[in-house]
Amino acid sequence: MIALVIRLKSRAHFAVQSKNGAFIGSGRRRKDARQRIGILIAIFAVAFLAVGGRLIQYGLDEVTATASLQGDLSAMASRPDILDRNGLMLATDLDMVSLYAEPRRIIDPDEAIEKLATVIPNLDWSETNRRLRSGTAFQWLRRHLTPRQQADIMALGIPGLGFRPEKRRFYPGGAIASHIVGHVNIDNMGLAGMERYLDQQGLIALREAGLTGGMALEPVRLSIDLRVQAIVRDVVAKAMTDYQAEAAGAVVLDVETGEVLAMASVPDYDPNVPSRQLADGSVDKEYEKGWFNRMSNATFEMGSTFKAFTLAMGLDAGSINLNSVIDATRPIRMGGFTIKDFRGKRRPLSIPEVFQYSSNIGTATIADMVGIEGHQAFLTKLGLLTRMDTEMPGIATPTQPRTWRKINSATISYGHGAATTPLQTAVAAAALLNGGSLISPTFMPRSREQAAGGAVQVLAEKTSADMRYLFTWNGLNGSGRSAQVPGFRVGGKTGTADKVINGRYATNINFNAFLAGFPMDKPRYVVLSIVDAPLTGERGGRLAAYTAGPVVREIIRRSGAMLGVQSRFGTEDDPQLLIDY
Image (cartoon, rainbow, N blue to C red; front, side, top):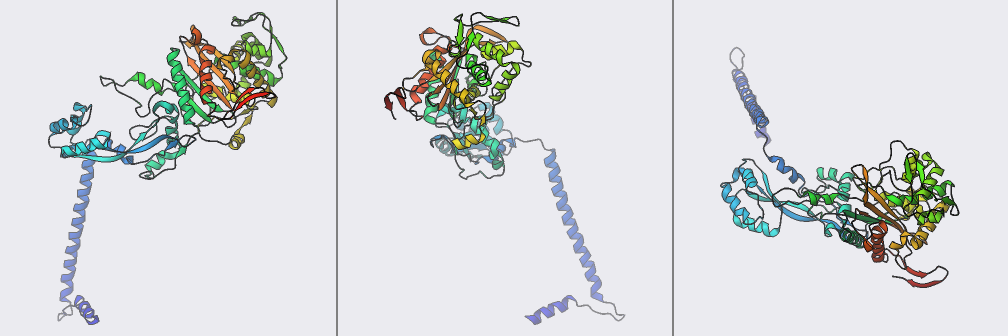
C-alpha cells in the first residue's frame, strides 16, 4: 500500500527533460490548470447571476396574498388555561383545523366552490372565487373547522386544498365572566380583559420566539370565584331587564386583600362569539356594545355614595365627630347656585342623620370646613381622582374640574362634578371599612400578608371605626334598609345622581348606585351596584333605594354563604342564632 502511494506521488511530479534542460510536461500542466480555474470562475459567475436575477425578480413582483400566512406562524401557539380561584375553568385551548387553498393548483374554481358550499355553511361565494382565482401560493378559506367538516371536505377530493392545525380559545362559561376574562382574535391573540393582560406580560414575545407551540403552559389562576360571578351576572342582568335600564353592573371586593371576587357589567357578550354578522353581512354594532365594561372602563358621577368619603374626610381631619351637629335648616347659596336637600328635614342634623337623610347641605358644610385643598387632597389620597392601578386593561381615568372653586368642592361633596369608575369607588370604600388601609384592587390571588405589604394607610383607625358605625346606622335606619339581608348585617349608602346627557343634567334620568359592606361587625366584603337610567324599580320607584339597593340585597342573599360569612341573629352580647354553612 505504501509503495502504491509513492508511485502515484512520483507520477504527479513526473516531467520529461529536454536536451536544453527544460521540462516538457510542466508547461502543459500550467495551461490545463488555468483552463480549469477559468471554468470554475465562469460557473460561479453564472450561479451568482442566476441568484441575483431571481432576487431582482422577486423584488419587482407584485405583492401576493401571502399575508394570510401570518396567522399560520403561530397557528399551533398555545395559551395558558385561565382558572378561577377554586380551579374551575374560565378559558382553555381547543385543537382545531383550518382549511386553506393553493390557488395555483386549483383546476376548476367554480366546481370547487360548489362542492365546498355543501359542507361549509354561509360560504361567501364571491370572496372564495376571488381567492381561488388569485393565482397565489396560499389562501385561507375557512378557519376553525369541526372534525366532521374536515372529514366531509376531504371526501370531496378537491385538489389544491389542505388543512393546517390551529388552536381555538374556548370559554366554557360564555358571557358569565366575559369582561374579566376578555377574548382573543382568530389568531389566538388577546384583545381584551385578562387575555390581553397575559399578552402584555410577555406571552406575545414567547409566541414570536416559538416557545409556546405544542407545549403545556402553567395555568393562570384568577381571584374570581366563578360561583359568585355567576350570581352577580345573573342578578344584574335581571335588574337591567326588570327595571328597563340602559345598563347595570356590580362588583364584590375583599376589603382585606383587594381581590375582586366577582364583577359584571351588562350588556355583555359571549367571548366565544365576540362579534357577529347581520343578515346583510354587516357587523352587528349593537352586539359589540357589550364589549364596554362600565365597572372599570367608564367613569360616572357616583352621587350620594360620595357622602361617605366626605364624612370620612371631616372625621379624619378633626373638623367633626359623631356628636357634631350641622345646621341644615336652610338651603345654601354659593356662587350663584342654591344647594338644598331632597326631602330635607329643615332642622339641625347630627352626623349620623346627615348620613341617614343624605343631606347635601350637611356634606357641603363639612367640605367647607375642611377647605378646597384639603378636600381635593383627601379624594386624591383615596385614589378617586387618579387612574387606578390594576391588571385589567382599559381602565378609565377619573375626571375633575380643572380648577377647584368653592362651588366645585360643595357639589363634589355629594357626588356631582367629579366622575370616577365604580370599581375604584368600591376600592376607596374598602379603606373606609377595613381600618383605613388603601389596597389596590387585583384580579389575581393575593394573601393578606401580600396585601398588607403594598397597603397605604390613608385614614386613622378611629375614623374607620366611625365609618363602620355610620354604615351600620344607615343600613338599619336609612336608605340602606333596601339592601338589608337578615343575618348578614349589611351596611350601606345609596347614590342617586342626575345623569349627564350632552353636557347637561337630565332631571328625569338617573344613574343609581349602592355602596355596601358586610358583615358590619367586622367587614369582609364591599359590594357596589350600579343601575344606569332605569325607568322603574321596586314599588315603581326609580331612585337607588328601589333599584341599586335591591341588586346588592340579592347578591348578598345568594352568595353570602359561599363567601364564608356566617349568618347571625340577635346581638354579639345576646346571640339568638348562628348559622354556620
